[in-house]
Image (cartoon, rainbow, N blue to C red):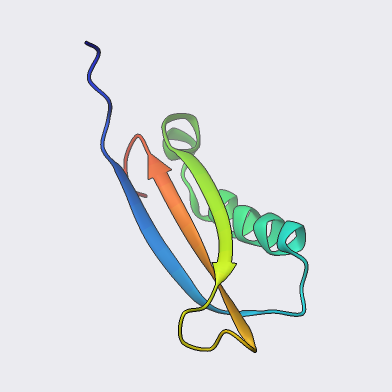
Length: 72
């Protein structure tokens, strides 16, 4: 079997429930792209998932950001 690279998942808290998921994902991806070096952009793949906050479900959401291929 081919070995899979381990991924790392980070939680981003305090996201407004008022913004659509698509806008939140786009904004987070833009921040990541601006922060990555050229090498990181070519090697690290990200997946962003927006979920309800387990603490402040009424007013906030959370993003789970998964990095494959390394951690920036």
